[in-house]
Length: 151
Image 1: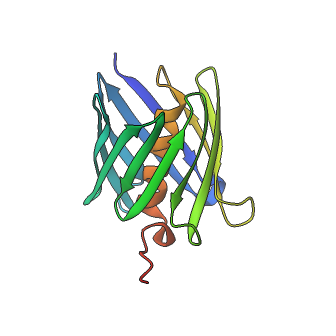
Image 2: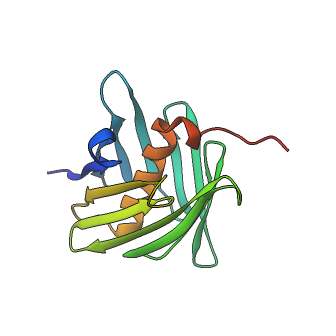
């Protein structure tokens, strides 16, 4: 039987997340059939690569942190079951904090006022994988997450 990551990003006015884990591959969907995007990720020896919708995801393990990009946004994550990090640029970005308790992961992207909470059931996946899936879903479905800031 396949393992599942499923839950919600953003509470009542948010989005469903549902992904299947098969070996080192994570595939699924953020959002619904009409307003949603496919998630296809692969855990490699050096990190995670894949896509969300038409945007690439490439993250590598560097000095105990996951560093890379989800589409146009920079990403840094640290930790396994207690995950912290940042997505975006220093001025226009989102702090990330998540805590795994058993198979449950709860966290927050951004501030408590303008951010989005998330709750996921992880199956056997570690907390960092669930946090990454939540960030990828946020990037895919929140218009403000995929905007690039020109300098």
